[in-house]
Image (cartoon, rainbow, N blue to C red):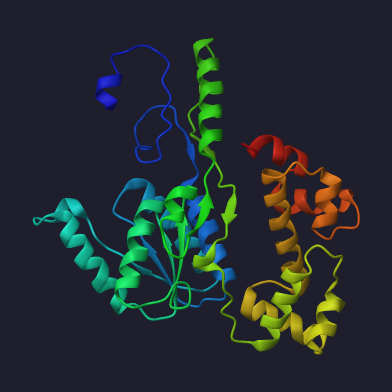
Length: 315
């Protein structure tokens, strides 16, 4: 494809994640960041064992790289599905199905799996059911991509990492217009980050061994629209703040205050993209006393204001 395009002296932009290695100006999804976001969500379920499922393609390997880096930062290793269809001599579908079932059967349970895309996720969910395993109790399943039709084909429906597909197209069109006006693209690819997680039943569970931490996290998520403080959580579980913080850091990788803020900002991201609520209304819905508190926290953790985030990433 690259060789076919080279003779044509016209501005060209590659928007493919599958063929992002082609030496053309590239606007695409940040696949490494996408894998890392998937890892963080699966870590938040409380699972301690992880796996990655994806074929040996460039984009899938980049997503696995981000997944691996995020898990390693928390001290976790993972299982991976190693299968290269180009190296097989038998019909690839039959071999892959057989290899997938053997791989799934050998994995320790319970386990959380990130799948490189929705279509593979639907197939993997079917294999899981055929082995007599339950989703999400035995296998929590998260796919990269959030097509509601694809994700809804599975039972239960699959949680998905939301990709900025429309934004990639819009940014590519803007860049192409500049190139047609004589402006150079630059040497670095433009990589757009994932938009968040749509949580469906395939990961809607909380595997936390420490009962006090489980009670605390459930309390935080149940009261996310209220102005809860660390002392409210401490009073709920009836242990000291110092001890609770230490146990949160061990189990969740962040303090009690960090857990509250994490859920507040995740909820804010969802409302910014999926609702017409004002910034002030979103601040109230996420438990902030004033929209300025949301703005400060959002800019510190996300790197931009809520208004600019909505403008940039809303479809």
